[in-house]
Structure formats: structure tokens, C-alpha cells
Image (cartoon, rainbow, N blue to C red; front, side, top):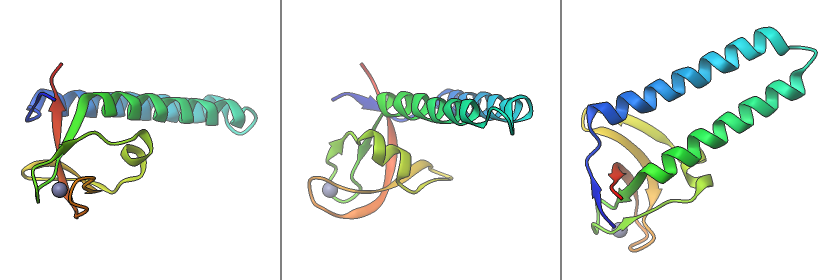
Length: 111
Ligand SMILES: [Zn+2]
């Protein structure tokens, strides 16, 4: 598996997609709520699914304890605690190799 450190452009692209999603949700709420709330909910679920699927396809994770590099499932990407600090983005993940639960750096997958 090939990977590299994410660049500023990668972070920018993620933020851009999330902003577009938030604008769509907000405009959708104005136009669709409360009468068409089912449609609005569908847009929210579909958008979240697309964002997470895209993020999952772009990223791999390296265990800070044993250096094992691995992918995570769609659901883990969605529900794992996320954060950003001065070294970049991280997720709180349990390593499938050594079993340690640690703040794990997000790496960019290279095809
Ligand atoms: Zn590990």
C-alpha cells in the first residue's frame, strides 16, 4: 500500500467538499422543511454517505505504536472520534495489528 502525508491542498479540498455539503443542507432546509422533511433527510444521508465514501477511498492510517498501515471501514470512518491539531488530522482508532487504541494520523493513499 502506497501513501504520503496529506498536503495543504488535500485539507483544502476536504474543507471545500464539507462546505458545499453544508450549503446544500442549509438551502435544502430552507426550501424543503418542514413539508418535505423526508426528502431533506435523504439528501443529508446521501451527502454524508458520499463524503465518507470519498474520504475512506482517499485515506489510510498508520498505527503510532507499531507502524502497521491499514484501511478502516465506512462505519469507522463515520463514527470514530476525529480531530485536527498542529500536526494534521487524526482519528481515534484501534489498530488491527497490535490492538492499541490511539490517536492515529490520517495519511493520503497514492494509487
Ligand atoms: Zn499497532
